[in-house]
Length: 200
Image (cartoon, rainbow, N blue to C red; front, side, top):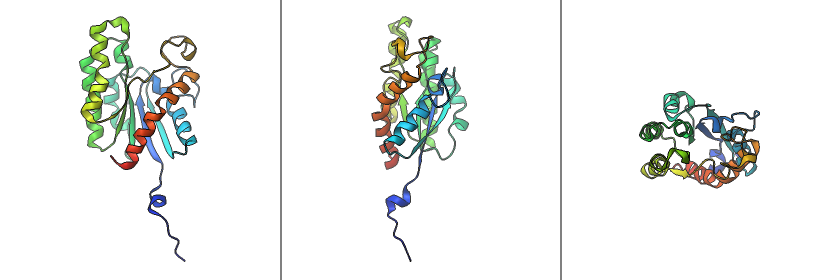
């Protein structure tokens, strides 16, 4: 007896995403399961998406640090990367040109491995002055255009400046804050997943 299996069923498999980031990805100050990768995975699965989201977040990491650990942080078999780095560069007032260079290096290396990227943007603190923050903020849309990436303009959209959604340090989201991030980024992630599944 031979059972016919449609190509769609035969090809069905878990899409493996890696969230490569800093403390905003790692879930600084939160309980296990409350960080961005775990909450995003649960939300995607609730929508019927067969997706796993690995947590490759390291608290305190800069774009340079992310570039340095890229090869082991994003293992073979990864279908897509959500890249969330740059907040620590901005908080430390590091040269935006260096952040751009390291992010471009990460993107070049992932492109060489045929791994698509969703780029999560970051805004620099406004107290650094317009000369700095305008240059820094432009990194993400510029790179997204250059590399043809799906862009989520600001990872902390809806959370930054909201006391109830942040830990006492005012920098890291609470569990509720992470929920807001996931709700807001979800349409972009789903658009990215559609692109990943099409192989484009």
